[in-house]
Length: 154
Image (cartoon, rainbow, N blue to C red):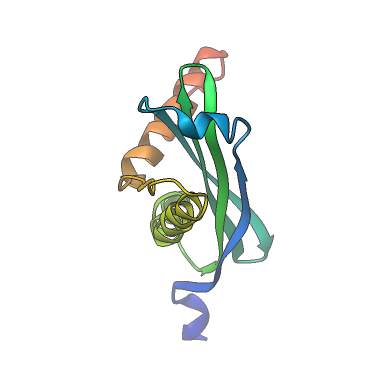
């Protein structure tokens, strides 16, 4: 009976869910000498898949351009399946929004660096991310949006 009360956090699996690479302006763009600009967008999403089991995914979009022409575009989604049980409700959001992405993110970084290198470019090394700050910012934005639409804040 005591086992049912203990918190459970287990990684079931970490996997690459989606990966795409586009070089729409090759080969001409490869002859350019100008340094490209790099734009990186990150996101985190979580989906319940069974009772106490969640899929958490970290997505990244990396686009490099020279002027208005795309050099390459990489879109990747690294996911993990996590068993999370018997946690207080007020801790679930933080575990799913902070702890799980911190586990998944290094795999995403490696896969993006690898695919960019295999495409013939110098690797793009994504910076370390403070998922706690990212989570807190999302919570603050959600609270502000809830307050802006006239819904009472608690």
